[in-house]
Every structure is written in structure tokens, then in C-alpha cells.
Image 1 (cartoon, rainbow, N blue to C red):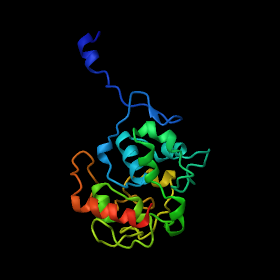
Image 2 (cartoon, helix red, strand yellow):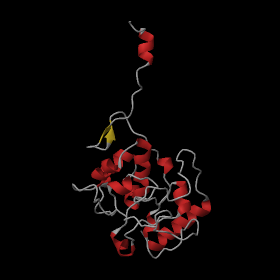
Image 3 (cartoon, helix red, strand yellow):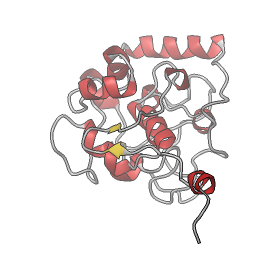
Image 4 (spheres, rainbow, N blue to C red):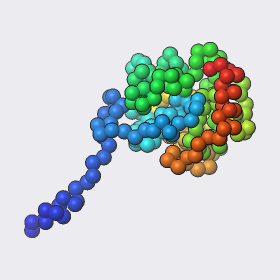
Length: 210
């Protein structure tokens, strides 16, 4: 029996985003807003938001962030001389200066942790700062809470590397895949940082001259 043309048309699926993993750009556009970012945000936090909001796998992102061809499961350290910010800049719509500030500079590599360090309250907002990785900094500049490395569920640390394992679990532990914070952050309904928080971040950044 012949189907009605109008019904057949209604049954057609809507177009979805299709990604070209070789170029890290979708065929029909991608979703990313600068309003989702806070000052001094780390490259991990930025890429987490990009991957999460576009349904990208950690493997797809990890293969495109390095200046040279790498094993995405091994990844690279988030440093200014390893991450290809010129490739990422047009993809994310962010200035080179902002991406450069999201990476550990060479002058601070000697005090940077090998493991992902975080403030649970910041991650609940969807924020991880490059300052969190500096080992002399024991307390979060915004909340005054102790910075942590171990997951509250599996009690294991995650290496601070841009690899498929870390990038595939936005705001979650790369080992057990459970949330670091008590709830998943909402990027669309987030409120602006308070003036006090902004001042605290800026003063801490100036202290380390990063």
C-alpha cells in the first residue's frame, strides 16, 4: 500500500552534526560560546566544554591538538610548545592570547603538577584554571578550599595530559568516569563570576606572572 507523501516526509530524520575528525570541524557547524569560559581557564577545561557540547570523542580531539602526529591515547602535556593553538584558534573562535594563557608556560613547568588538580566547587561550575596545576598553590583562589588530585570515588589521580582518556570524560575522572563534583555543570545557565572571585584570580595570576 502506498504511503501518504506528507506522512513520509514527516518521518524523515532531522539532520545532525557530522564531524570531520581529520580537521576537527563539523560539516554543518559546531557549538561553542566564549561566554562559557572564565578568566585563566585551562586548555583541559576549554576542550572539555567543546567536546561535551558537540558530542566529540576524546580520541577525535586528542589527535588534533598537538603540533605533531601523536598517539591519542598517550597524548601530550598541556604546554605552550606542544599544543597547536594556531589550529585551535579558528575552530574555537578564541584569540591566540587566550589559548596561550590556558597552557602551562615554560617558566612554571618546574612547579606544575603531573596530575590533574582541581577544586570541586570550581568543577561544579564547569571551571578548571591553569593556576590549579601549580603545586605551591594549595588553596583555590576563588573558594579557599583545598585543591585535590585524587578522585573522591576511586581515590586515584589522573595524569594531566591531553589524551583520549582524559578528554573523553568531561568533568569526570578518567579512571572511573564518575563526576569529580557533586553534580554535572550546566554551561547554559551559569552565572557570572563575582567581582571578588575575579580579583582573587587576577591577583594569583600576577603572583606567578604566568
